[in-house]
Structures are given as C-alpha cells and as structure tokens.
Image (cartoon, rainbow, N blue to C red; front, side, top):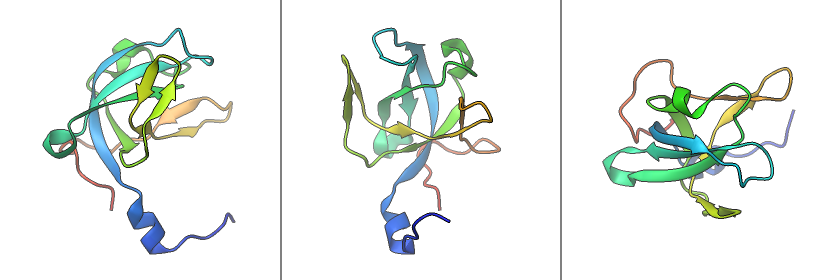
Length: 113
C-alpha cells in the first residue's frame, strides 16, 4: 500500500470533468503527445493540456470525449506549450495511457467527490 493521506489532503485536489473541444498533434514534445483544449464549464472555462496518449488515441477521436483533469496544479511549460491542467489516466498492461472519464455524460466542470 502506498503512503496514506488524509481526507483533507484529497479534498485539496480539484478534479473536474471536462469535454475535449480541440485536439492536435504535439510534434515538439520529447515523448509523443497530443495537445488538448478542454472545456471545464463556465466556472473554470477552457484549459490546455498536453497528454502522452498517442497509443490509444488520435486527435480526431478525442474531440467530444469527456475526461477528468486536476485543475488546481500550477501551469507547466512543456517546450513551446503551456499545460494548464493534468489530464488523468491509467497505464494499461503495456504502459500506454488510457484516459479516465465518467461512465455517462456529466455537466462540464462538475467536481469529483
């Protein structure tokens, strides 16, 4: 088991659902990645993210897909791109990332509880 955290620690991580509205290749990244623009609803708005998800996804397959993202990390500069949120996923058996998302349509911006 990994290090335990308190529930208060978990509450500080702001995980929201959003819909990918734009996706494009990110050839400047050191590891293959896709640039995303995600709509997190009226409270948070549009945020950019870089995700190393090229094994299971193409930019075209991502538009319209709902994903989970951590929206309260500081932005991170990745080459010429400023990533504003951490898009969440799981490693499959080969180490490729599978995106985390809701099992049904959820209003953009809703917080994971």
